[in-house]
Amino acid sequence: MVSGREGPRRREVLDVLRAAGGPLGVAETAERIGVHPNTVRFHLDALVAEGLVERRSGPGRPRQGPGRPRTVYVPTPGMDRGGARGYRLLARMLLSRLAAQGPEARASAMETGREWGGVLVDPPQPCRQPTAEEAAASLVALLDDLGFDPTPEGGGADRPPERIRLRHCPFLELAEEYGGLVCPLHLGLMQGALARLRAPLTANGLEPFATPDSCLARLAHADGDGDGPGGVPAHGPDSVPVNGPADPHGTGPADPHATGPADHADGSAGPGRKAVHR
Figure (tube, rainbow, N blue to C red):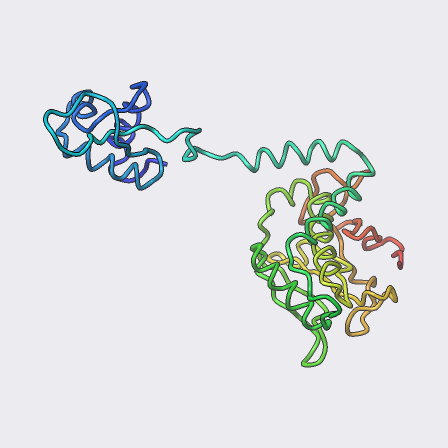
C-alpha cells in the first residue's frame, strides 16, 4: 500500500511503471513524470522495499559503454494488496445465507465452531490427557490469541476455573446482528478446542453481554453429569442466554440489551423458560 507523506508521488511512480508495458529505468521514469532522477530513485527503492516493484537487470535503452547491466524496474505481478478490505461485508453475506437455512442454522454454526476449535489448538502428546487446570489454561491462551481478552473466574489452586469472562469480542458487530449464529459458533469453537485437547471438561454455556462490557463462558465436567468444575449446575437460574430475544429460528439479528426470554448458545431455555438439562 502506498501511503505516508510521499504517497502521491510514490503512487505516480508506480502508475507509470504499470502503464509502461515493460521495464523502465530510473531516467526513463523520471522523464515521464518530469522530476529529477534522484527523486524517482528514492521512490523506486521504497516501492521495492514495500514489495510493489521488482528490481531487475535487463532490457531497455542500452547502456553506453562497458560496465554492469542497466537496472530496470517492473511492477510486482499480481493484484495490489494495499487496497481496502471488505471482510465484514463478506461475513454478513455468508451469515445471512446461513440464517436462511432456518432451524438447522444454529446447529450448523455450532458444528462449524467445533471443527475449527479442533484445528486451532495443538493436541496433547499421545497417551497423555491434560488435567482440567491445564486444559482450561490452554483454552484461555487460545481465546487470548483470538482477541477475546479472557479472564478465568472461580476455581482455585487445585480446581479449574468455573467461568471465563470475555471483555472483548473480535466479532462484536456480527454478534450484535447475528447473535443466534455467531455466539453458538463461538461456543462450539471452545468445545472443539477442549475436545481436541482430550480435556476432562467442556464449555457448556456462553452468555453474551452478561454485563455491559463482557460476555461469560461457563465450564463443566465433560462426563455429562451436568455439573460445572466446582459442582455448579451447568444450567440454572443464571444460565447463559444468547444475545437477547431470539427470532423464531434463533438465527436472526437480536438486541444485545434486551431483557426478555432468550434461547441459549447451547440450546437450553432462557430466563422465564424451563431449562433443559442435558
